[in-house]
Every structure is written in C-alpha cells, then in structure tokens.
Image (cartoon, rainbow, N blue to C red; front, side):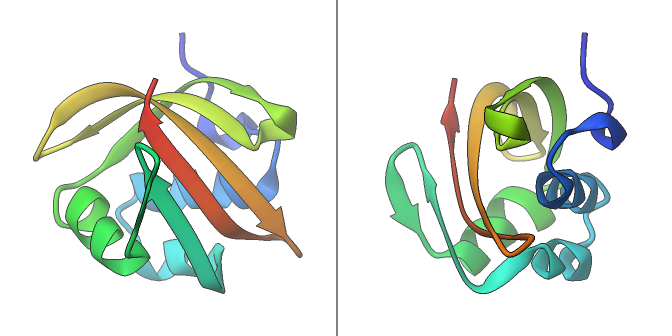
Length: 107
C-alpha cells in the first residue's frame, strides 16, 4: 500500500516528491535552499550531478511506503531507468519551508 503524494505531511517534502515524480527540474530546485546538500548511502554527493544522473536523466520515481518524523523521513520504492526498482529511505532537513539537506540510501 502506498501513500498518495498529496497526503504527505510535510509541505516541502510533498513538493519535492511531486516535482521528482513529474521529472520537473525547475520545480524540484524550487523546493531546495540555494546551498542544499545531499548524501547517498552515507557518502556526500554533488547535488546537481546526482539529481541529473539518478533522477532527471533516468526518469526517477518514488512510491511512498511510509513516513515518520513529521513527514521528514520516508521509506519509498524508488525506481529509475538505470537501476530499476529498490527500497530506499529518505531523510529531509527542512529550514524555512525549503529542504536544506536530504539523505537517501537503500532501506
């Protein structure tokens, strides 16, 4: 059973997932602070390069399985054209209504 994106609790996270699933680069960057950072499986990555490779260049999509921490921690089935589908966890830091950091990795 998945949670509809429209029902995600945190508005910044909801906007991020909505933009990611729509493959809308402009909308996704609107959800982030100008100095946003991220990590994948515990290693910091270049945000722009990672998004280009893992999301926009490979049609990334999240189906949300569960949320915690006020909507700032997600477990999702994530799929893209490069890696196929995998169960992932996501943790978001939100400041002033925008995401300043997210951490993702296999769940």
